[in-house]
Image (cartoon, rainbow, N blue to C red; front, side, top):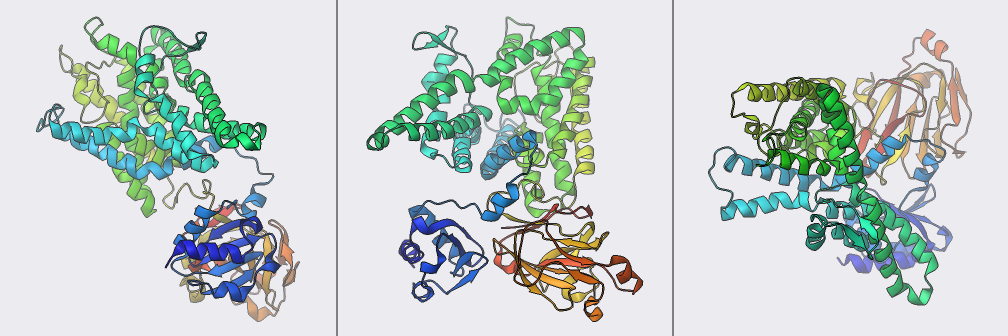
Length: 619
């Protein structure tokens, strides 16, 4: 089957790229939203090789492909460019205020999610080398060919992290990925690293100063660069004439974005880091325990922004022959933070019932614990779920206070972890090492316990708060206490034969539309209705059990079959007290009746729910 040929024929028959508002797909169907659906001839579409059938529903022109829908969808997107965001997504987002911190965290998580396999694999490679290398069993030396190759394989993912992030961020922001990679690659270009690592001042064009900093493994500079590129690209596109776009547009985008990134955006972490270092140093001179507590608690965010590089030169200087021979701040704080990340991630792994999250959490926790490689734990688990991150910060902050009170010292430069904790052995006795073990234990155990407590066992992939763009959401239509569908006292619903969903024990006799769409079915008994969203999600709302026997008594519909509804509109009222007095169970199942059309259905954490809380996401 030639997917490219099929995609070209489909595009031609639906009126071409210019007639397509958006395109998504489910398990078996391409779902087009067309500007003019009337120009499409169903019989011609159905004659295309590989097309099983067509369907027109809820503003969508659906082409049924079957098991090959994904490669056909990918082929269409490779030859055409149009917006794949659903109308429902846009409607749902209108007027909604989001916490800026949540927006930032969700953006970072979305950019990092595709990189998790590489981060975990590289992290475990570092663990393997730590065990086999000189730090533990000394089976292979650091100069051994095998060690060098495996070390390069393990280090490459983290060293070139800015480039990997440039790819995912450009995809997320829908900007040119090749220009994004070109700009970000500059930050870790060998000659530039050498230039910015020297002692002589560096100037661009002879008068614009450039801050000396290292951007290898840094996340935030890459994200800022791609974000800037998106808007530079829009601006340059408007300013350049049509005849010059092919050569002048990429030149200007690269030049402007590269200069601003290097001079202004990328150094932000280092500049702030120097300021933070000065503040912490002042606090340390006044109250070492307080400085270490704050430093250890904030370490995940410091590493994320690359600010920790500002501390590295002073740490190396202190450990060197011209220094005091030990480090009092960076390495002790990182010990508390790294083991805190490990503990928090283990807490999630032990508590969560989500298989995908558990599969991510265990190897990420091992990587952080044994090798001090916290990126998989931070970006894949704790930052994503937020509460475990807070647990890690609290516990590592407490451990940092202990480190400050007992003046914990590191005598060798290595990424602090369980296996490298030997760096805290003092030539003057065992007391310092015992303190290091206590600091690590406090942070690890405290984070694990606290994370286990705050993590919801049913926590899905950041519940429904970090929905990626190809998810569509069903909002809660009835205020009350939500329960698992399996708990409904009716085998028709509890068995799942009608589809996946949940049920509500209502507090108020009012049903609101869970999305914008159409009333597809409204039974004469008025106790149950079927809705279909603008994205094609079919939802059954069945108020009570066996309430069909009432013949419509106590039910007061506010809409009728065929009506268009908007999310939050009251569609049905019922007399809750009378139903209870009549002896009817008022448990109300809410079911996705076309569940088999979706590759993933995520149910929000159950419990007490208000109207229009996010409850179900389908992909």
